[in-house]
Image (tube, rainbow, N blue to C red; front, side):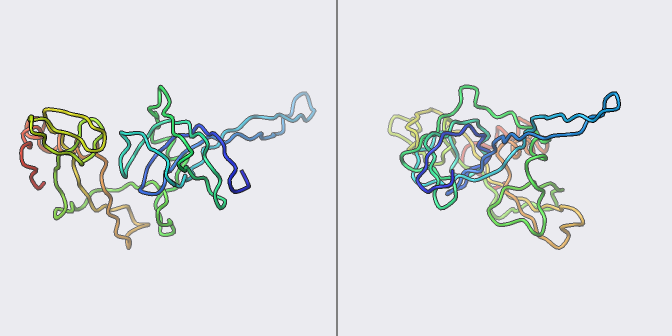
Length: 231
């Protein structure tokens, strides 16, 4: 993939989406030789080694699956069809197609991510995918809130219809009840190596729900419906 305009098909894991990029993980295979000593003679053994690669796909007009977030974790296995090389980078334009695999849920645990990603450091580049770990020391209360979202695609572009249903502008789904989405940012203490660095992260929806369950239990969490309150 060295020439602009060249197209290819790739099977990849989509880890995270931003407004202009997809962060993907793929497997690269290479052969590695090692020395063996048997019965006093040296022999060579070749093994097929696999490396996890993290790269980026530039979004240039490709139609995305309906339920994908505008920005956030995706964690799905897909076939990226007719991706195009553009100025040395991989891009998905209006002629490309993203096909989610039948069993597309990417079962990626922390061990895999630790192998593929570099931890946050003072040399981490902007808009790169990195591992962040730390202890929550402060909640950003000023912008913490609960809002109503579509239960199908998780978009917040919903409106109440005249028949009492909730219509989603993004995917057209109709429902009777609202679903709740959460927005919560926290400050982290990431250890002595980043003592002089202020680290604030936006939490994933499932993480926020786990925090709410740990703090107030399922009954109190479910009673937070109605008008979206400030957390």
